[in-house]
Length: 295
Image (cartoon, rainbow, N blue to C red; front, side, top):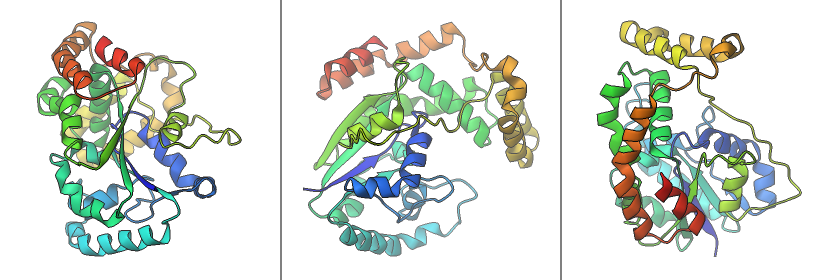
């Protein structure tokens, strides 16, 4: 039976690198019996954010067309057509926006299109202090002006992985594949790990470890955050400048953290009980279970 793989992130777990690979290696995927869906595929971001927006599953940022959700029925029809054209292949969808979905049962009308395919959700977890800090640095680049201390209370639920997994398990026919990002293994290749999670392990194909969306130094992020509160219109230019001229700030490259050791420890303590509940709730490979419990 062919499968539908839905990669939902988490954000900041090399999702951009994985999506970049999937977008640019269609021939390799087809050769091995896989297809990265075209419907709702954002050609700039290389992921299915447009699909999520058009189905009304996420409001989207200000630059998203106000009437994008009017295309829901059209998008569902396109999905059905594309599914029918590739019944001989496993299908892949990737959008970390689904991480923020409050009710995964809202996916049921969308999933019904894919008939009796096995549905597999792929979730890569990251130690909560590292995840939240990295996510905060990203949302500053996206335009917010909050300090971490004012942003964290509004975002802390995102890092409750037990809540997220419980939400996904509302989909009765769903399988769940859980991985760990940032375990400290030098040889780790997130794209190879993803391909392995979908059962694609072609040793004849070299998967280069291209890192996308590399984080900026903390002082650059602070400058962007302050500028966001003064003039949001220059956000893109400032982010672009710091990104393109990252080498100029190489003396700052080791200073990418905005949290103290004490703050990081406090964040980990917040989620320790929830992580334990998660490891009791679902069956995990022993190394993954032990790593989550060590957080």
